[in-house]
Image (cartoon, rainbow, N blue to C red; front, side, top):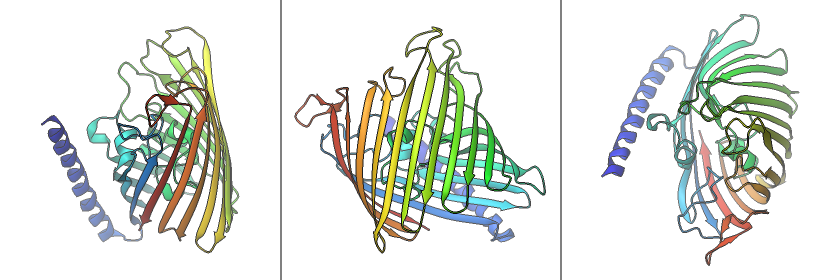
Amino acid sequence: MIGGSQYGTTRGHVLLLGSFFFGLSGRLQAQDTSAFKLSVYGEVYYGYDLSRPANGERPDFFYNHKRHNEFNANLLLLQGAYERDGVRGAVGLMAGNYAQYNMAHEPEVMRHIYEARVGLRLAKERELWIDAGIFPSHIGFESAIGMDCMTLTRSIVAENSPYYEAGAMLSYKPGRTIFAVLALNGWQTIQREPGNQRPAFGTQVRFDNNEGTTINWSTFIGSMGPDSIGAWRVYNNFYMQNEGDNYGMVLGVDVGVQEGPRGAVNTGDASGWFTMVGIYRQRISGRWWGNGRIEYFLDDQALVLDRGGALLGISLGLDLRIGDRASWRVEGRVLGGNEVRFIQPAGGFSQTNTAVTTALAVRF
C-alpha cells in the first residue's frame, strides 16, 4: 500500500508538470515557432553483470545502467527550450534509472526534473548572461544523455561528480572562450542537506577553437554535510577533447580535497582523491564506430567510494550511429581494485567485476 501510494503521488506530479509543459509549449509555439524547440530523447538498455548480484543492481558507485539482467530505460527525456530577445529558458522532464538512482536523495516532486532554468542577457552587444534554476553541471565532459557521450556507460568519475546543479550562473563569452561563475546549493543537490546553510561556488573556463578542440577547467568549493562538521570540499576538473569526422578523443584529470577524514569533526586535516580517464573512438566503416576507455580512480580515505581504495577500469565498445538521431551500442567493461568490493556469483566478494551492456537510443 505504501509503494502504491508513493507511485500514485509521483505519477500525479509527472502528469501535472507534463500538462503545464505542453500547455506552455503550445502558447510559445503559437507566438514564435523559431524561438521554441521541443526535443525527445529515449535510451533503453540491457545489462548483464557476470557477478550476478542477487539484488539486481550494479556496483553502488554507478547510477546509470544500474540494473542487471533486465531490459530497462536509463533515460526518457522531454525537453523544451526558448530563446528570443535576450530571454532564454528550458524545462526538461525525465524518467528512468538515471532519475531513480541519481535523484534518490531529492524530494519526490523534484526527481523527474532534468532542468528548469531561466536566463537574461545583461548586455545587448555582448554574450553576458545570468541564468538561474536547475541545470546540467559545469563539471565534466559526460552527461546523462548517452548519445552525447563517447562511450555507452559513464566513467567512474562522471558517476561520482555532479551531473546537475541548482543555483545561479553568470557567464560571459568573448569570442571562443566562456568564463562562468556560479553560486550553488551544494554538490549535486537541489534541496540543501539538513543543517547545511552555507552556499557553494563554482567557476568554469572553456575554450573551443570551433575546429573540434575543447579545453576546459572547472572548479567547485562548498561545505559537505551539516555546518557543525565544517567539512569543506574543493574540486578541480580538467579535460581536453578533440573531435574529427572519423575520430574522437578526450583526456580528463580530476582532483578533490576535503577537510577532515570521513566521520571526523573539525579535525582540520585534509584528504583527497584523484582520477584520470582517457577515451578514444574511431570510425571503422560507414556508420560503425569502435571506442575504448581506460580509467583510474584513487580514493584511499573513502571520501567518495564506500570502501575507498583504488579502481582501474577498461572498456571496449562498438557503436552503430545513424547520424545524431539514433544509435545502437554494445560495450564490455572490466573493473579491478585493491579492495574486495564486488559480489561473486557463488557468494563472497572479489576484487574484479565484469559486465556487458547494450543500449538503443533515439532522439527527435
